[in-house]
Amino acid sequence: MSSNYAWLNPRNPFTPRPTRFTLMLMGGASIVLTLMFAGYQYSDIQGLQPIIHADGTCPAEAYSAGSWKPAHKFPPGTKMKDRADAVGFAGFQGCAADREFFWHLASDRPEQWENRFPMAFDYLWSPGEGCDIRPLDREALVTDLVEKGGWLLIGDSVTENQFFSLSCLLYPHVRATPNYTENPYFERHWPQNLYLLPTSPLVSKLNFPEGFSIENTPLVTFRRVDVLLSREELEGLYNSIYSPGPDSPLFSDDAFYTLSPSEYVAQFMSEENNYQTMIVSSAGHWTTSVFQAARDPESKGGGIGHLLHFFQHATAMWADLVQRQLDKSDRKDRQVVVRAYLSGHENCHNNFKPYNKLHEYTAQWWNWNWISEYNDIFQWLLDSPLYPNIHFLSIDRPGMLRPDAHVTGDCLHLMTGSGVLEGWSHYIWHYITREI
Image (cartoon, rainbow, N blue to C red):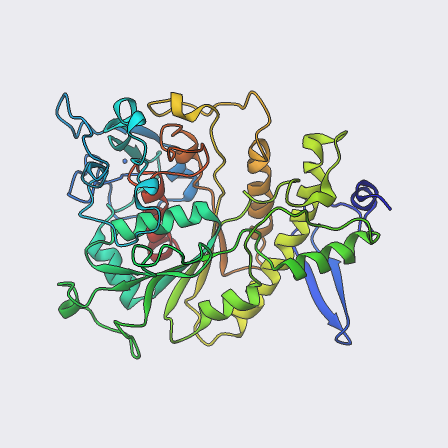
């Protein structure tokens, strides 16, 4: 049986509007899947806050409906003279994380400085009408991460971009592990953590939860998980739906990193870790290059439609597994937020200011043309009342308007300090403390 045939002839016919799968283990042997469902006001951390709203409510759609405004932070003639200047340009006092430090700040290639800096740091997100959101406050965020619970970030290298940004937003109150300066050979998929710094002046003011350890309780953790589920779980799901032949493997030889939800949800729910919020984002590695069984040169996007079909099944399986574990917990304040994935920009390094409107792609780049469809699938799924503790946040539009906010070597990953990554953290903080 060819891989195309396997995908085009599923045992369970495609249903356009999935809302849930129920996963049951029968006799400990086979998996039976039943389809049941028909002013961002980036304040630079030094206090620039030109757009102040009341401390009220702000739906994700209202937040995302705004625009980027010039901040006018820099005197005429300001130039980048050293790659470390990016830290101050962004309004940070420093950054705790050190893996690929200047890559994250997009200051690692001097030939790009003249056209990009400091302008890329000189815009503020102004939310749309109906969004009342308090300014981003470093000390208040640190306080909430200690007293209410930390964040577990689950995703690919774009989520790692957010982790690095947080290490700058929260500095000088946090330290980061592992230390990649001392040992640059640590693997990229190892857990990265931010811990409260014992010398932080906040230590004497905080109300520490029972069992909290300054040395061992993380405020933020990043785990590299590219495709939500483990390789074995995805292969089992694929086999149960499509009955592929032995010559139709799901995956190619392309490398990716992933874990089972059973592992990272257990970490999330560990009382020792004191997490309150798990932040998840996935779509970038859901390509026909990785999932070779979906390839079909004669169909939409070379088989992307088949992969979107499988993504519906995978996200539903994932949501069932996660919600089931949350239901078992005695701690009822834990929440999971799924951040809409952000696609890249064409020709990003020749764009030096924000867009005023979204731009259509002129060519097919990886799976970027269909990222919105991946997001739609996730949002449709999580609109169901069956997942009361899992929330979808459609906050990708601010990033889609920033072609100038990428790292130096590609047009997908995001630079720290432009306001895009900081906006994600700002809105998520607002959402979990004001909207839920």
